[in-house]
Amino acid sequence: MVYQANSARYESMEYRRCGRSGLKLPAISLGLWHNFGDTTLLDNSRQLLQRAFDSGITHLDLANNYGPPPGSAEENFGRILREDFLPYRDELIISSKAGYTMWEGPYGDWGSRKYLISSLDQSLKRMGLEYVDIFYHHRPDPETPLEETMRALDTVVRQGKALYVGVSNYPAELAAQAIDILNDLGTPCLIHQPRYSMFERWVEGGLLDVLQEKGVGSIAFSPLAGGQLTDRYLDGIPADSRAASGSKFLNADQLTEDKLSKVRKLNAIAQRRGQKLSQMALAWVLRGDRVTSVLIGASKISQIDDAVGMLANRHFTAAELAEIEEILV
Image (cartoon, rainbow, N blue to C red; front, side, top):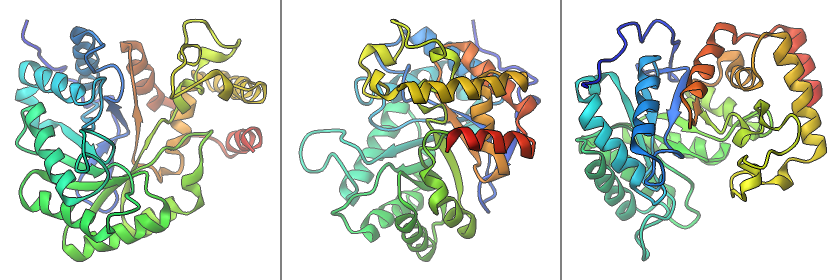
């Protein structure tokens, strides 16, 4: 059956301007970090993408190394794009990144011009695209001059391989330098992608101020702290959970009794608000409108529905924010 997108897909989503650019992003974006590689059934990935787009989620976030194995998320997405989404290409914001290890040898990692341009060429081939909407440098490179890395981003825009560029995981001072270099080159930095959640708040120590001052948007990844900010761990660590599986992204050692106590107190506030804890955690990251979009992962359609449902109640009273702050301190 040929996929037909929901005709009401834009009615349930909120779109927010990304910094001072002309681009608007959905308040909720879908990341393909997990659940889109070769270890996941393609039909499940297809259903997640269809549900996301039918819900107004127009921004799909990938990277060269997403899988497993690395590259497979882009390949699988490319197949689904060809089969289901080609008529909607101009309604989609598709992003990719390079910066982590992708292939053997000295040219398959970090931030050299050689690596970044080669990697984007490979990503475009895997996805069957002429261009991505956003191309990120995925992490700072302590050895390559920042000017070289930013010139590579400028080059891919001038080559027509990316419409916009951004950075990810850059600390505030380095982000400010990167933004200034890109401005001087004539290719403004559109967006920064940092890790940000109730349990990881480093961006509040200066990065959000830098981005606001310079007119750069932001999209927060891991807003649920790897699943900690859900109802999954209210009664301990289930045997079939990510934390129990030995995952490098969340392990049982992180779920201390103090952390679980905070989760339970936060959940009580969410219940009073008529929300799931996951919904409140997403709304909290968006509070104050300093973050453009939250980047969710999903293995089930219900998780996408929950995230979109958050938009019906994403604002907080001053008393609620104060109570949450007291728990998190």
